[in-house]
Length: 387
Image (cartoon, helix red, strand yellow):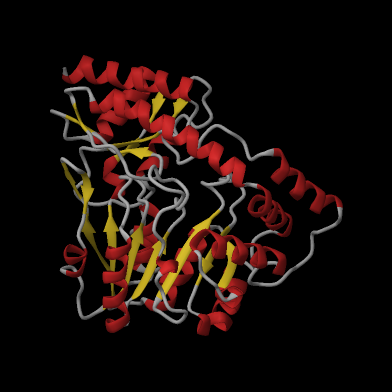
C-alpha cells in the first residue's frame, strides 16, 4: 500500500513551467510566458525592506501580518472601494496563492465538489484537487464581443455537494471581467446555499476602463461566505516578494490566525514593511504600470486583432492575450515551435483548463520594444507554418 494519497500521486507539472523550465533565464528568449513585466520593484519599496533588515526586523511577528501592514491594507481598500472594512477580516498569510490554498482547505474534503470558473491559472486546479474534492469547470466562451460567461451558466454546474466556487476577475488568461451585477447575483446565490466564493482579485488594478475592477468587497456583508484574495505581485511589480492578503468573514479571525501559523507563520517581516511602503507611496507607480499595460494591449490588438490567421478578442482586464491560430488545434505544439524557432516563450492553452488546447497565452506586461519584437516573431512563425 502506497503511503501517499491518490490526489498527490496524480499531480502533474503545469504547462507553463513545463515549457519554460527548458530555457528559463536564457538571455536569447523573449519571456512572455510568466505573468510579470520587466520593470523591477521600485526603489522606494526596496529601500523600505532594506531599511527593515538594517534595523534588525528579523523576528517573529503577528501570525496574521504586522499591524501596520494590516492597517495600511484597510486604508487602501477603504479608499479604493469606498467601504469601511473591519481590520479583523484582513490576514497576510504569505503569497496570495497560500490564501487560496487555506480557503480551499477550510471548506472542501473528499466527497465534496469544487467549481472553478475557467479558463484559469493551472495551480488553482491543483489546490482544489489536493483537498480530495471532485473538481469541474464553468468555462467562458469566446464570442465576437470577447470572452463571456453568465452567472446562469455558472449556476448550472453547481451540485448539492458544491462547497466552493473559484472566480478570478479580471481573469488570467482571458481578461474577462465580472460585472458588479453578476457578482451580486452569484453572491446572493452562494449566501443562500452556503457555498464559499473564493474571489481572486490580484489583477484588480489592471483594467482598461476605470481605476479598478468591480470587487466583491463593494457589495458583501462582513460574514458572507466569501474570501477575497489579493496581492502585491501585479499592481506593484512585486512578483518575487510573495506577499499577498485575504479578506475573510469576520467571524473567522481566529481560524485564519491558526491556519496562517500552520501553513507559513505569516510572510517574511521585512517584505511586509516593503509592502507598507507600496501601499502608502505607490499610487503613482501603479498608474505608470497601468499606462504600460494599456500600451501592451494596443500592440497585441494590432498584432492579432488585425491578422486573418488569429482568433482573438481584446481583453477587458489583466495583461494577457489568449488567442489561437486558425488551422492549429495543438497550442502546446505551437508554443514549443515558437520557442525552438523564434526564441519567444509562451504559455500553452491546455494548462488553463479543459477546452483550451488550441489556445496560447501571451503576457503583454513587458516593455513595448521587447513585446513588439516578440509579437513579430510569433506572427512570422504562424505565417510560415499555418499561412
